[in-house]
Image (cartoon, rainbow, N blue to C red):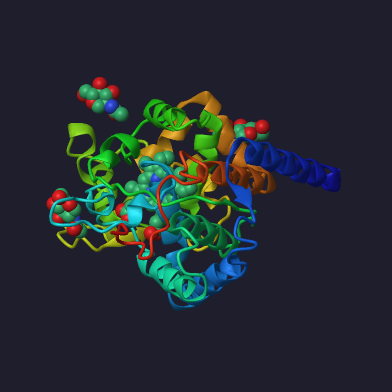
Length: 327
Ligand code: HEM
Ligand SMILES: *[C@@H]1O[C@H](CO)[C@@H](O)[C@H](O)[C@H]1NC(C)=O
Ligand SMILES: *[C@@H]1O[C@H](CO)[C@@H](O)[C@H](O)[C@H]1NC(C)=O
Ligand SMILES: *[C@@H]1O[C@H](CO)[C@@H](O)[C@H](O)[C@H]1NC(C)=O
């Protein structure tokens, strides 16, 4: 019974992947002839960086998400601001939270040495996110590639395209629908909050001044709230204070996120709100009870995310430095 279920899961997974590559102009193994070592090199650099700092894995997964939801997966999130342009990474939605840029720079430098001008920064981000999922215990997957890099990065684009941690389930469903995702895929992708950290500033309103009151969010488990308050004291002025998003296994791409949410220990309103709708609450419950199923759904959803509004063919460019547009 168990193995039949496993088979079903993996066959469904393969079919989903096949369907998706038909729809996309990206291809698995796009660099097979032009830079055959690319995926090995990315994996190598991600591994080395991970050994030095385990946090880069979560950083790289978030980077992929923050890239894809704003102007598509075009590495616009990597571009540095200039005196005349405030870029995405310096928007308040991103400026305190993103990490992993140095890993991408490192990969890019290595690739420019062996196959100059061939591999896009957008593909590097997608490969690095996959390797990060894998290295933290998630299911590995093939990454269709052939993305090209965009030439525009505007801080203002983040306001309408990125969800905020105060979103409710309807707002989340809507913003994901605008990007072509079902509500179920939204719930599946939210499981990424099983790794990494958050700054206190991203959720401290839930502890000290929830919804215009002076109190704490009543949907937050009391013991968990006390623990969070100790880590994020009221009136704290240190913008660098962080907490793990899944305290019991912060470095592991598992279903701990769903266990937390079911126990009223979702860190953000946007996490806990999944319990306020019967359909999404059932999905949370299902993902908790069936980790194998979540793992494969997550892999499929992140492959789909990686194809969002991609630039291909002759559109865009192959940046030689991921932080600046080619001149
Ligand atoms: C559903 C809507 C989402 C909201 C509102 C949201 C919001 C946030 C916020 C506020 C943080 C903490 C930032 C900080 O204070 O440092 C965070 C972290 C993170 N998010 Fe999300 N996120 C969402 C969906 C996603 C998706 C779809 C992914 C990836 C597939 C993702 C991956 C991550 C990861 C891995 C971290 C940890 C980053 C680190 O440790 O550096 N999130 N998210
Ligand atoms: C992020 O941007 C906001 C608004 O521009 C600014 O007030 C804040 O100091 C910035 N935070 C960091 C960590 O740079
Ligand atoms: C926030 O407060 C308003 C007005 O007091 C109330 O109607 C609303 O239900 C509250 N929202 C939440 C999420 O508690
Ligand atoms: C989760 O699903 C199980 C089995 O279907 C059910 O017994 C349980 O009540 C559900 N829990 C929640 C919180 O929905």
